[in-house]
Image (cartoon, rainbow, N blue to C red; front, side):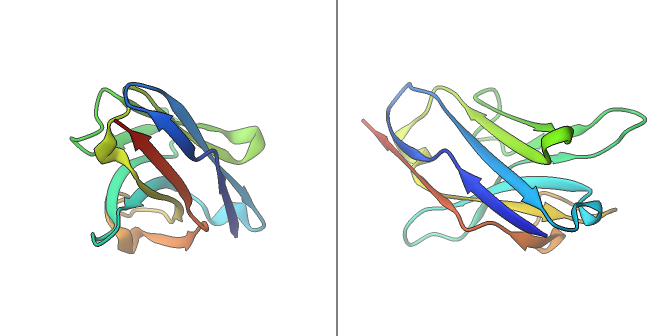
Amino acid sequence: VQLQASGGGLVQAGGSLRLSCAASGRTFSIYGMGWFRQAPGKEREFVAAIEWNEWKGDSAYYADYVKGRFTISRDNAKNTAYLQMNSLKPEDTAVYYCGAGGRWVDLTQLAAYHTWGQGTQLTVSS
């Protein structure tokens, strides 16, 4: 599996941006996708994840610090996950990484992911 993240950039506080993560290759090994972020000098932290469930509908998970502002979604036909980010704050500034996870894992944890994209920079100015 290969992941290509895109959509980062510079935005003013209060603004919006959408990140994309396109998967290719052995996509049948993907049962969920997620976004983590890493600010300078800090550890990579969970942002949001979406878990596939064709019977009950996908499940989304969010970190408390983005809940109500960020929305994760996916387009199955395009093998792409999205992170819509609204009401951005300067503390959201970080490199955002998308990951692909397997089945029966906790997608809020780094260890759940078997593949990572290259990261895309988000800078929010005050």
